[in-house]
Length: 355
Image 1 (cartoon, rainbow, N blue to C red):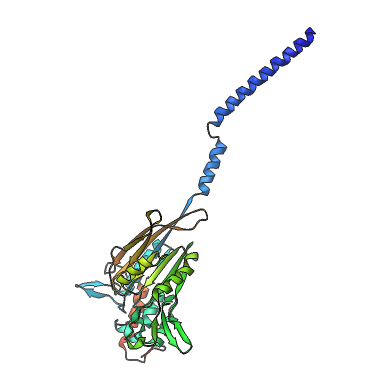
Image 2 (cartoon, helix red, strand yellow; image 1 turned 30 degrees about the vertical axis):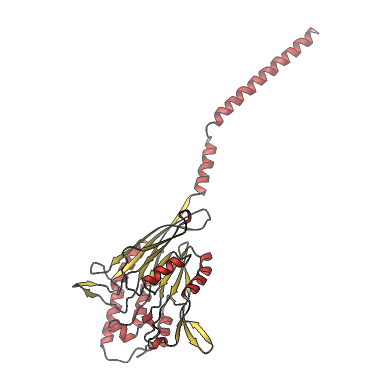
């Protein structure tokens, strides 16, 4: 009996010791848990890296109302403008932003221009624009003045999108838009939608078989198609600044309006704010004067997390004077000189060009 009591006593003491050991180990584990283990730190770092923000930069360069002024000209005794200088500036900006630059024209490319423009009825202008690598243009009212047949030839020669989805040619079988309504350009990972609103002079003889559609209705329709598949929507508008301001306040979904027709030099963009502060949306309206005297530049920053959509985070707009300080693109200058030489010669009009 005494032996049994000793045995049970030993087992009890052993049980107590085990409990004390378990308690001590639990305290130690608790202290260790208060500090992140190396494995936990690495896991948190991996999660942060997985959520790292991606960033993209886009540059849009724009001109408007060049009206066939291909060579430099004088303003207050100073040499300004010139398509070769503009091309040199574009080339310089592209070299610093490879694969991230769009070049567009907001209308009135030819008519009222120099001897080369008039001699070739805009053919030389389109050729030089092709060589510069334009991405898109919207037709201005001046593009129609030499007639639709001439315009069709120029559009067929263009290696860039020609927008004018709101101007319709009347035909026996109905009406047909003169130009494209919109185009989507892939710039790096970004998808940029460009749509265009053109303008005609209804009383001009060349416009008698043309009609303008409902600009707002058409633009809203195009936006409905563009928004689901683009990260940025740009409207090329040859309507003039007052009309652009109205469009910016009315259309939902346009981010940038690049304007023409009013020959306005906007050194700072017109900004239209829409919506509540918590979900405020801004529309930036820009325009770059006339006659290649300025190159408009828009810098846009985007960001996104994981596989989410791209968000526009910053927009900067300015105009850059084109003058004798800008180094001309030698190849464009040489081609223009060749056109100038031929335009002085007495010879038949080039094939495919209206007299």
